[in-house]
Image (cartoon, rainbow over all chains, first blue to last red):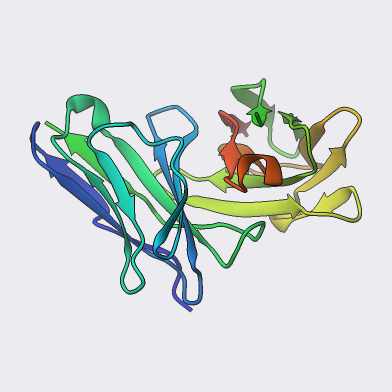
Length: 113
Length: 114
């Protein structure tokens, strides 16, 4: 059973471009979290998704950021018109259901130049 | 609102010495607690979890933690650390109060010296 797969592992974007980060959950998992981690800091919650549904997006910036978890395919975190402050590691985790263990991917390190 | 506090940003310790990493949480309802470890440029790996039952929880790599409801704490311990335990450790909490989103503390860097 493959683990949580995130791609790409590293992503470089120029200011103003769009960044698309993908997260393929573990087989059978229907819940996904997205987190952002700045250097030397902890993980900041962004969004909690269930297939075709957003459960909690209280940590998402109001503009430029969106997330989806369609019925088929990976979860996508989309950042439009990136700025230097968006540079960070973005981690996703998948779960079988609420209150179960969250399995983390290796992260996508976004660098905005 | 739910929150997690890890007061120690860094804990230096000599190899084979015992260690305790502190974690305190705040929540108005029953919680589920976790400790994760992160090695450089890696994702997070679960060390142990408390969902219910015995308040002393044993995890991987010789780590254990004790849930103390009266002190709202979930401290992580290991009786004898190795160089390979050098990493960042995160405490996390989830509950019905937060729609089950997993909230992390700011992390504690464990630095094991020879």
